[in-house]
Length: 149
Image 1 (cartoon, rainbow, N blue to C red):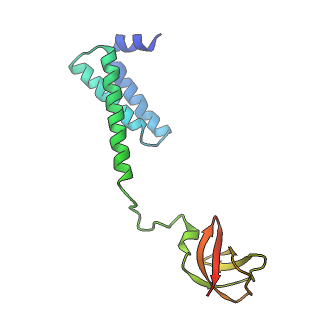
Image 2 (tube, rainbow, N blue to C red; image 1 turned 90 degrees about the vertical axis):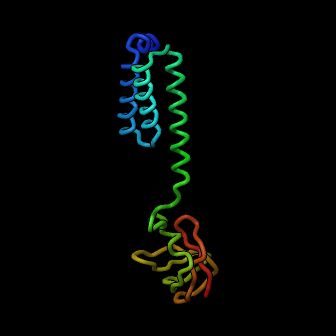
Image 3 (cartoon, helix red, strand yellow; image 1 turned 45 degrees about the vertical axis):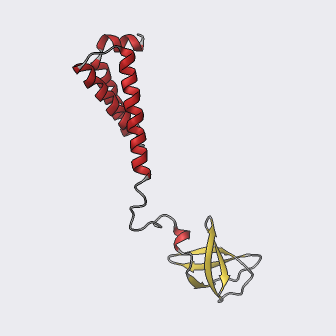
């Protein structure tokens, strides 16, 4: 069956079903897009119940509502900013920048180890002996960059 014939035959009911299918799809593929397309489908169905229009106009209403809803949602999400009270929670290496500690192993050939928190981190920097005090100045992935204090 042709999709356009389906929409022409069942009118508003097909938009409502499409809207609810898109809302259900949001549960499987979360991301905030399908919920707004689903809402646009439901609103298009409600408009079709109140004021019947041809299917090309229905598709235009659905498209405009979907695009406007998604654009407004994205604008709102981007302007929210960082609402966390612990913004570095999953950025363990960044949490240690600025800390001073003592080398556990000497830095030889540019690499050594230092205990921080509950783990031992690999560090890079100038060759230094074990027991030297260092400051963490950056990171490259999971390798902390240090300098002598």
